[in-house]
Amino acid sequence: MELIELGLERCFKEQASKLCKPEQRIARVTVVDRGWYIVKNEAGEVPARATGKFLHSTESTSDMPCVGDWVCVHYQDSDKSARIHTILPRKSFLRRKSAGKNIEFQMIAANIDIAFIVQSCHYDFNVPRLERYLVMVNEGHVEPLLILTKTDLVSAAKLAQLILKISRMGISTRIIALSNVTGAGLEQVRELVEFGKTYCLLGSSGVGKTTLINKLTGHDKLKTRRVSDSGEGRHTTVRRQLIVLEQGGMFIDTPGMREIGIFAASEGIEENFDDIQELSLSCRFSNCSHTNEPGCAVSKAIKGGKLSQEHFDNYVKLKKESESNKLSYIDKQRKDKTLGKKGQSGMKRKGIGKK
Ligand SMILES: Nc1nc2c(ncn2[C@@H]2O[C@H](COP(=O)(O)OP(=O)(O)OP(=O)(O)O)[C@@H](O)[C@H]2O)c(=O)[nH]1
Ligand SMILES: [Mg+2]
Ligand SMILES: [Zn+2]
Image 1 (tube, rainbow, N blue to C red):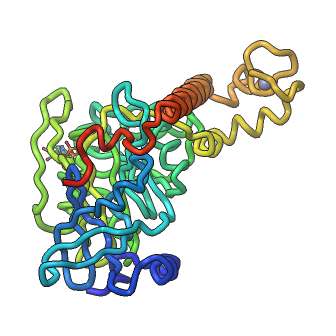
Image 2: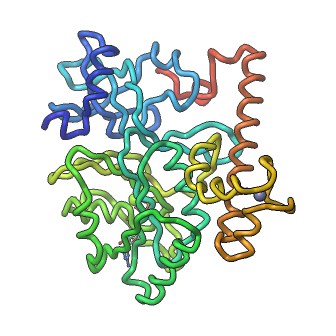
């Protein structure tokens, strides 16, 4: 195996020559599991930990290694384990607001070329949630692709209706509908996978993310599990993991997500709702809130059936959420600073620090 197969592009090589010390080598993080990592290079995969110095230099969870990161490592015990010293700057990333009340980023993966946003046609299908994923993916400079699974469980008419719902929302992202059971649509996925590129699967538990990877690799190496009849998943995949396909290309499997909190994602929101941004240029007032101002081009488009009300409502909701989370985050940072907590940020309090 060569590093180019793992997606080592020129930009990373250049960064490595500046940031890795002579005794260090470049490797890619393939597994993250509560403070432990697995890193891979030409010679194979070994377990790794971050150095204490590295941990002390991190200010937020975004600075911690995540699956897909390129890192400078020092191999030890005759190359049987490694220490992570530096993360090379990411070309793209996927992150969300961590679940629950805590306002922090949670890194999902880094250096992704295409994110597969996976929903099942059966129970999981939800367009506002699709838009949340799209905002997250746009924010991280990743190209999105929508995957609708379990087409074997719905009629062709029902599938057409779901696809129409997506396009009515103004979403123009490419869609692949497939069945892991009959194999319909799988060829379309195989065709788009390229050598050296990294794909990340995102979606609720039980939609068939892992099954899809197993289909692509051709062997059932990764664990999957039957879901209940209501389609409710059971969180079979518990860690993020990068898998290299024999035919080239890499897939990152992730555990199903219940919440996709949006936080400080104004760029992603603008990109996903560019239709609204464009219309608002024609509003009479430049600070139009598109509620009841005269001469509002957005309201006019909604009334005229040119813009979906649901799409607009979703825009307002996500924008509010993103901004209010950002304000709380800034507020928390300020408080932490005045209390002098910067040196012992959240991560160390949660015990992820060095052992
Ligand atoms: N009928 C049908 N069942 C499928 C399809 N794809 C996956 N399944 C089944 O759905 C169940 C869940 O699949 P998984 O691949 O484990 O789902 P997952 O998205 O990886 O779930 P988590 O790991 O919990 O996030 C398994 O029983 C699969 O066999 C499909 O296209 N059609
Ligand atoms: Mg899984
Ligand atoms: Zn307006």
